[in-house]
Amino acid sequence: MASVRARTVLLTGSNRGIGLELVRQLLGTPRPPAWIFATCRDPEGPRAQELRDLASKHPNLVLVKLDVANPSAITEAAKVVEGKLNGAGLNLLINNAAIYTPTASLEVVDAEDMMRTYQTNAVGPLLMAQAFLPLLKKAARESTEKGLSCSKAAIINISTVMGSIERTAASFIKPVISYRCSKAALNMLTKCQALTYGDAGILCVALHPGWVKTDMGTQEADLTVDTSVRGLLSVLPILSEKHSGTLLNWEGKAIPW
Image (cartoon, rainbow, N blue to C red; front, side, top):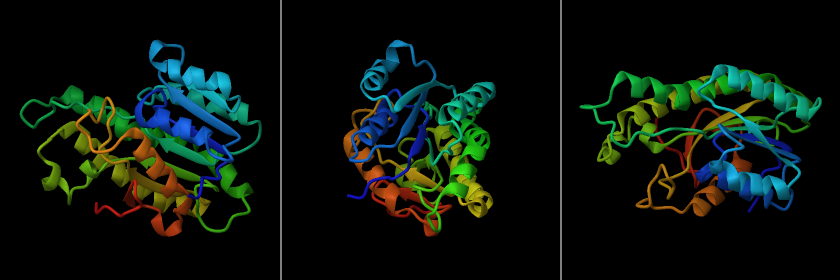
């Protein structure tokens, strides 16, 4: 399996589930990134213990405090990462952090839940891309690679088939309105980012990790975290300009909007 050759990677929501496994498997590749910036809301808290354990063994793993629902926290995190990179660019931004309210049916979902979910799942990735855009552009400019790729400069938005309008009926047994709507917005954001940032050499793709056995996905899910992340990491190296602005699953198969 080809591996991601990005020298510098930043992930949001890195202290559990898919985010934590992405960090773990990236560190375990034959040629791991020179820097992995793993962000979460409370790097010193009990829920980040596994992340701290990894950081104690891997000097290329840097933990960064970041709440994607807080614009000022995003700005501060960008400053921290820029300082650590010391003139280098950021090759790969993975917007993984998300929240999910399983009981959010049309009958009971309220404005507070809708706004809170949009803030994390759609607005957060928007602001993350804005804040880290200078570092992504720098990586793209300094790369010798042709075309678009995750090794050059890329924004990967972790989305879901539940944000696909065309596929809604097939999965509507779980309405989860706020989550669905926020991820549909994330899909549109990905398309807009691709059309805007492509000229700067930045690849923009949305990836569906599958229904995964995590706190969010529940234990009823089809995939283990390990299987999902292995799939995602096998897709990243094959992404090119033809995939920019698309939604793919963990096996690299296209999902309709």
